[in-house]
Structures are given as structure tokens and as C-alpha cells.
Length: 99
Image (tube, rainbow, N blue to C red):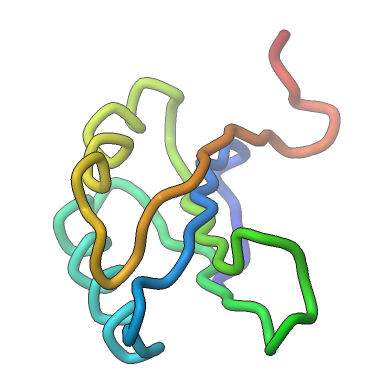
């Protein structure tokens, strides 16, 4: 994990493809981080066994502005391997939420 300092966060909830391993997922996210240098990958986690809800994976990106998400939000539209995006969401630091 990397401590978030952006104040705005884009989260991706994902499932692993059948047969995908952690190394493939890590490499895919490292490649995406290089492709989006203005964003910071703060967290990439997978549940242990059945300890956690579906979907099993979570990635959190620090973003400088909400509009900065446009490019990365489309990265996984047609991707099925090594992960499949299930849902995405926005978060802000407590007290900094924008309604």
C-alpha cells in the first residue's frame, strides 16, 4: 500500500480470471500505473480464501481531479484476463466529500 495524499480516489472492484495468479494481476496493474503516470496506485489487494465479499479484488487509485479518471476508467472495458472489472466507485477524504 501507498499512503494516499490526493484526497480523491477511484476504486476498482474486480474478479480474477480463471487460472490467473497474483503475479499476472500485479504485472497488469504495474503496466497500467506506467500508462497513467498522473495517477497513483495506492492499494491492490485480494481476499484470502473466502475471507471477504465478492468481488474478491480491490484496487484504489489516487487521482488529482475527478476528470483525470476518464482514461483509466476505460482501460478494463473489454478486459477479461487476468481480471474482470465488476464495479468502480469514487471516494474522497473524510470531510472533503463533494455532493
